[in-house]
Image 1 (spheres, rainbow, N blue to C red):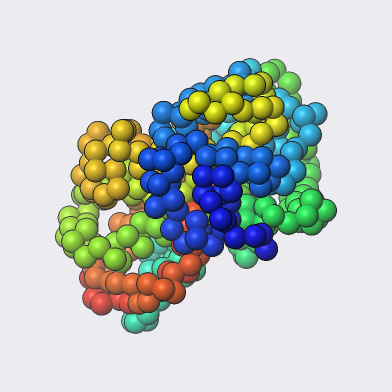
Image 2 (cartoon, one colour):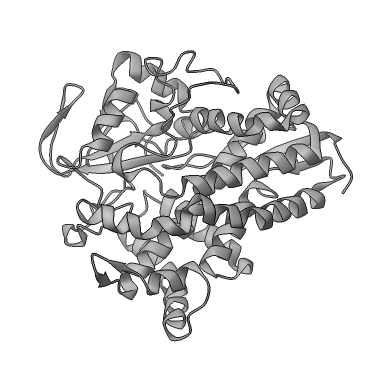
Length: 403
């Protein structure tokens, strides 16, 4: 447990309960009064809140390194560069571009399209299980199961290990204030789980993403098991938490906004456009960088090994970038949001995330035409750099079709 925040401009903490519950007023206040905040926590960390400054950092690979993208009390060793802790998201150029390019075929629109029928069938099964339930938890009983199924299928991992995957997510993304020894132990849990799976694919290849990685090259050289392990860990953690957070936040919005709920339930053709606005308004991901060379951003001098948080959700609410930025406008166009990041590290899995979010909403609204928050105060949100509802009790008011 860390000390409560006393001043968001000089002492912010992205794990503080007030931030976790509702960070949007904090970002708005800082953007107007102190657009690049600083805190001595975590050994020194900066927080730009304007789209312009977030974009400047995200696109500047000369002064900032991505060798770790999760702020903790400890800096990762430079010896991992240029690969970083979880390539390619933690990789620096020129290595990064080759590492990212290697992954792209697995997440192309064509590859994602092949996953849609099974994703839809799974969502329908989840929704059918909730029929007649009165009050259900749209996060724990629906949203959190969808990306787990998709990613475990892609990687060739047992879906029955879903609780373990969620345990990995919590340890790595939310346990950032824990002692380094405890974080290392938590990381080793994932290493011990994945290592035999990777070794098995080396011995007996299958039609899955782990096998694809074991047979891949970066820069003309085969990647070793340690590299495969870190990339699989990235796909497992990031692919699950970011997407279930986006699905959950979208359902949270619809549960508390009758007009939007009615519009999409009656006209599902509007869902793909609405998905982009949900991604803008409730972008789940805040990335991080470490300063590599002295640099000034927004008038603030930053020094090597300072952390910099990149709150893409705050950038998406910048009124200098978006009209009526604090409003959810389902048919907003154009909508050049930063939910998938900015710069060369833009999310390689954006097509997959969009598909899962769209299908999840289509199926839910096809099953439940009307619903509301059962208890707004019972909604809880995740702490750390990926924000989404962890519990989301909703009351089903009307089912739209029969199973």
